[in-house]
Image (cartoon, rainbow over all chains, first blue to last red; front, side, top):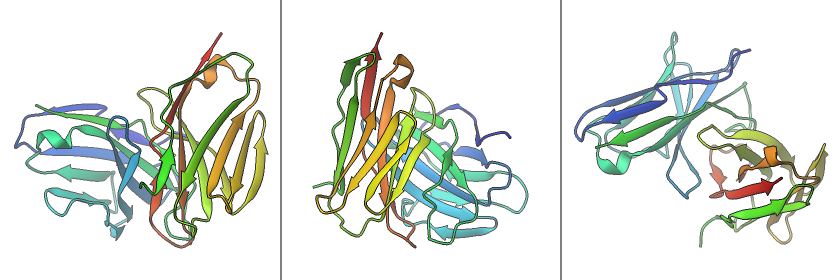
Length: 117
Length: 111
């Protein structure tokens, strides 16, 4: 059973460009979460999605960031007009169906390291 | 004050030592407590979770939660070089979408 897959693993963008990060959840998992990790800091929750539905985006910056999880295909985290402060590791996690809000049982992908030059 | 505090270390121990990793928190409403292990350049891996107070054991790992002190611990017995990683604590409320992570403690187990 393949784990959570993320691509690309490394992404370099110039300021002002767009970054698209993709995440394929584990087979059978219907919930996807995106986190950002800065050096020496913990993971910061960004958004929680189910297929075709954003459940909670309270951790997403109000501008330039968006996420989707379409009926077919991977979840996408999109960052428009990137700035240097967007440089970080972005992790996706998935979980099975869970009724108590965000699941405690999350399986993480290897992350995408975004560098903005 | 951060909601979840975790000493970043680094912590270095000889092989075979007992390791104690800790987190403190300020929100007394947290009910689920998790420990993740993260190897360098990899995603976090769920090690253990505990609901409410008490102890939980899994092989060489023991998780403890003391809700009265708002303090959680992860003990690693007979530590191995392969345990060298960053350990993240995390916690959440039931029926809530907000999960908070500690900054992680970097552990090195020397052969």
